[in-house]
Each structure stands twice: as C-alpha cells, then as structure tokens.
Image 1 (cartoon, rainbow, N blue to C red):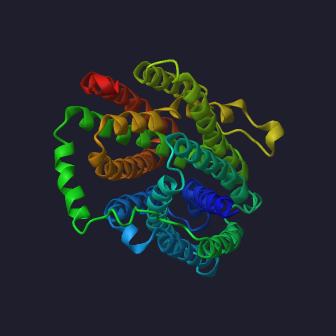
Image 2: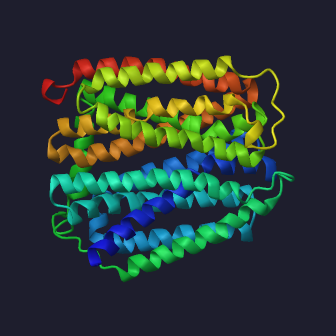
Length: 410
C-alpha cells in the first residue's frame, strides 16, 4: 500500500504540473483579451516559466538531496498553490508573471526530486524505465486534460471576461491536497543524500566546461535548443493562431491547441516501437522532414479570411492540420536525451542533465518570444514559417551530431 501511495504521489504531482506548465499558451491568449497586453508582452510568460526552471534546476541538482526531496516538493506545491489562488484574488498580468515564475521555480524542485526518487523506488533498470515511462505518459494526459479544464471556464460570448480566472480556485486547492499527500507519504531517499559530498556542486560545475570541448556534445545541445524552440513556439501560439487566423471561438481555440499535445503523446508511443528496429539518426531526420511537410501544408491551406465558426460541427479541417506536426516532432527530444546520456560516463551525466534543462528552457523562451514578435508584426503565416527555418537547422545539427558521436553511442 505504501508503494502505491508513493507512486500516486509522484504521478499526481507530475500531472498537476503538466496542467500548469502547458497552460501558458491559454494564459497568453486570455491575457491579450482580458488584460489588453500585446503579443510580445504576452510572450514574457514563457520566459518567466522557462528561465526560472533552467536557473533553479541547475543550481539545486547537486545539493537538493541534503534538504530532502519530500520537503522540497511540499514547499514547491505550497508556493505554486498560493500563486494560483492569487490569480482570481489579484487579477492582472503582473500576477500572471508571478504565477509563472512560481511555476518555473517550483517545477524545477519537483523535477529534480521526482527523478531522483524514481531511482530510489526502482533499483532495477527495467523497473526504473517502466516507472519513468508511466510518469511521463501521465504527464501527457495532464497536458490534454489541462486544455479542456481551462476551456470550460472561458466565456465565448464575452472573451474578455475574467471568468477564466476561476479555474485557479480548483488548481490551488488541488495543489494543497497534493502537498498534504506528500506530507503523509514517507519517501525513503536511500543512499542518495549520503552520496552527496560537501564539494559535489563545485565538482559538477567544474565538469561543465569540459563538456563543451567535445564537438558531438555541442551538436547535441544545439539540437536540443532548436527542437524545444520549434515545439514551444508551436504549442504556445497555436491557440492564438486558431482564434485570429482560423476564426475559432476562444474555448475551441484552446481545445484545438491541445491536439498538438495529443499528437506528441501518440508520436512518442509510436517512436518507442519504431526505434527498437531502426537506428535513431535516420528516424529523427525522417521526423524532421515529416514535421516540415505538415507545417508547409498548414501554411498553404491558411485561409485568406477567418472562418465563421460557432461549434465543432462547423470546425474547418485546417484546425486539425498543424497539430499533426506533433506526431513527427514527438520522438526527437526523448531519443536525443537517451542517445547522449548513454554515450557519457556516469560522472558527467548530472551536469549534462542540468545543461539539457537549461538549453531546453532557453530554446523555449527564445522560440516563444521570436514567434510572438513575428505574429504581432508580420502575421501568423510568417510566425509559424520560422519553424521551417529552425527545422532545416535542426536537420543539419542532427547530421553533425551523428558524424561526431562516438561509434558506441550511435
């Protein structure tokens, strides 16, 4: 029973953060409508989330075990729950900025803690992989659920209404309940904390410059940066694209944006099967080509004028085209991470994990900001056309990575 409670606590906190993290596109759209912010202003929320994740996760990865993973998660949940409750109490864009800073900081603590505790709960490699896959799969369920949860609180008759902020009463309450579950669930941290020496953080930081000496690691980090730039630029601005370019009502725009998450979930499951039989490099290059083809098709089908849509029965098929890019993008990120970590010695994996999180966050922030700027000044077609340029660069980085990677890792 205790083992079940521990797994429920791990899964529950990850699903909760899936809803919060992937609400950024919805909150940007609603901030434009409710608070009157510009698109470039709205993109700041992505930076608040991603840069705080990068900074805190890398800074705490080496010494969080001294504090204790369970106290860290309880603190994170309490902090983000209070930030959620502040949204309806003090409505405004500044509060949204504080919320996403809290989401980023707290998720960094949660991610490091959860992944460390997986290693304690599951010593066997197969069990570790199974629990990790289960948690990541449930994360995607949370992404899809969050889209529909937020859409239920949006008033299509008055899109500028603050009614959507009522969703945060439930989210704040859910966070506090999860904090209670973690308080009441003992989490053995095994020998993880004992293994952390006094100079562990300094030692990890000293290893970072050495990682950049290897050309294949530079190619990898470039690939990670470009991939997240593409995924986040599409995911963050898809609800706005659906409303302004396709003419969907606000709630439908948010729901249709969730189709991208569905494509990512299906694509990762399919990629896991395919990659048992084929080498990763040609599969990922084919994924890049497929994603580029879908984006080209979506832009070619972009209507000259928005549709007049009131419900899903009248939804244009164009609303389902762009999210199909998620099917092809999905395998790239986890496969890249698996390939690189298995190619590194164990002592280098901790600092590399920090770099992965940092470059992912930077890619997401830059992609969202750049797409927002283009959306505001040049329209949706040119904004998502940027993804095609990034995909071309990603293909080059993957070819470079494959050529530079040690043979044993290929």
